[in-house]
Image (tube, rainbow, N blue to C red; front, top):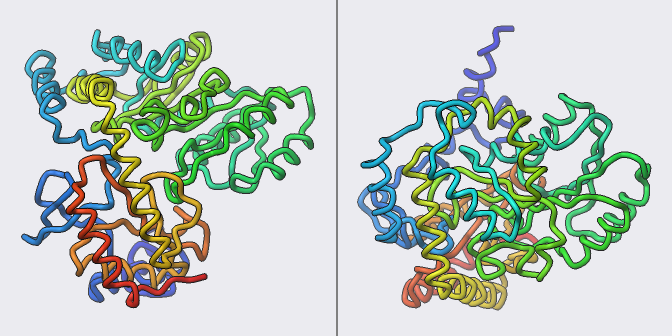
Length: 410
């Protein structure tokens, strides 16, 4: 069989699409008007966007504190390009380290309460590079079953490169977590990895229960705070949210959500961060983060410290939407944050539900397996500090209006 045969079949044979996890092939879904991906947005991202000349309220963005269009943030990016140009054209090891990178790493470490931080060119790259680098042969990784894909791939890479062992516990199930940890041999080094805020469900890792179990079995704890920065702990993450930042060993964060840029970082003890700097292949062999992106993140951190009301506001909006949607009978799972899933269940019904909201003037995201567990397909809605009360009123009105058109599974 030719290598590309499956690629052709993906567009022409429904059986091929279903084999690879799609209920319909993209062309059929597009013809039905229910293909929810790669939609070109014509207006700069904010609380409202334009698509094909029509205005939509955006509730499908990770721009939690609304900084992508903040004047200070945009000006910082422009000034960085004027001073440094558009790229470093090399890796951090060689010609790609600017004074801006070092300034950002120092500021990030302080912001999340760690000794040191290391900036990567993408958030996905942080987990793909840090996890294999810090683990050694025969070490053990334990993760929640619903961690982000970047953690899953980082763990897979560690298994391939170093033959580390892996275990998984049921999502946020502390009895199962303790059971898994109890069954591990005492000698190998252990790393427990969880999302601070789970990106699809919007629920929070219960660190007050996780930390004692980690200490009980001598494990280090890594928290992926991609969706926690700007949202929890006054914007500083899950550890500060629970008053447990000193009990978290490694913090991962991204710039593509609240920090209005692209890239990411790992933060922790200076020796561990330096080790990752010297042994992380994705870090070593990738071009460094462009100066405009670095300057953007520095400006965002300044704004978050100067305007703490943004973090308060996004949580107020999230709380209001959770209360309203539950009252209407929508299945929103166990969310505790401004990430609010509308759980539909069936993949086809979920895409059809997306179309209902889209035609009503609301932009949401569709999450299908493998981004979510099988039979838990959902619409992922998320809210911003910059959403006005009038916009939220309109969103609630639309949710009420289309309720009978959206099929909710028990």
